[in-house]
Image (tube, helix red, strand yellow):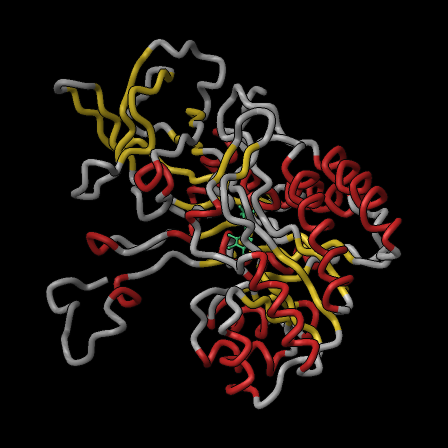
Length: 423
Ligand SMILES: *Cc1c(COP(=O)(O)O)cnc(C)c1O
């Protein structure tokens, strides 16, 4: 599929009059349309709820947009919980799918009334000690082990992953918790990441639905929901076919009617915890070419770096790049697009065919809306950029200001970092 930028060069020239590059820009229209499609895809299931994976894009303005479509939030840390608390999320609005969880986080999620999704059987006792009881609703994360393969070869290796309980443990956990008074149970699993195929959720659903039937039979635990978690991918590369969420929802429905309904479990709610699919394509990193360098290779230096978008440096991930204003120019140059970190992996693209780039050109780095800003860090003392929302009426809203040096120095006391620099 052709990858198109959701802004023009002229729009960016307007925006940069007020907000200098680099910044993350999110598209309200795309976020809304996609969230609506997700709701439609699972409308057949009355209890359906998408719990947006906060870690993907922890911005309260964006989470509030998703809430208009019924979304809750999936958290896994103290500050993610605090963020949800601050925007008034409560009770079953919050799913807590954490692992290696500190005591204070369980205490906070319980105070907010969120749903605890246990990563490990030993945490039953841990939670009970902290809270003095177990909540009436509890979920467990399942890890079937082995490898997970789909027909197009997409594969992950649950057996190597730190998450979740073994089959034996989840049976044991449900029995123990039932005995301790838990009344409503959930099952969760995340077995493959960024799957660009409509097959993943239905395959995972079959595995979890069959497990649910056995769990309910064997332990008598009342299964209230099954959480398919995240992992629905997006086409980072132009040659990839995007997922069709309506086909995915329909695929899950077929398996539901085949496995759960005949077992008398037609009241089970389906939950999801998508991050990437909800936000990834609707955010971009906007950066300006500030240098060109001709040595053994051709380099374009931009004003963003890996601290703004870590995926290429960390995973060698492909992010498509559009040179704004040169959408139709021939891609007859080969560049490495680099940031300024003192790290040779600080490259947004390597040997990428692009139109000729001149200093001052704006680059639109696609699909940075999830796991983009949020993975940012401060290496080399670089500061995190602003986040902007391109509204449906064409205006732009600052939804997080850029960091300033004072933010970077905030954890030191007793120095004057500014004495030779009046800002
Ligand atoms: C990261 C994560 C998600 C979201 O994953 P995506 O690939 O962004 O959909 C959902 N649930 C849990 C527990 C996660 O850790």
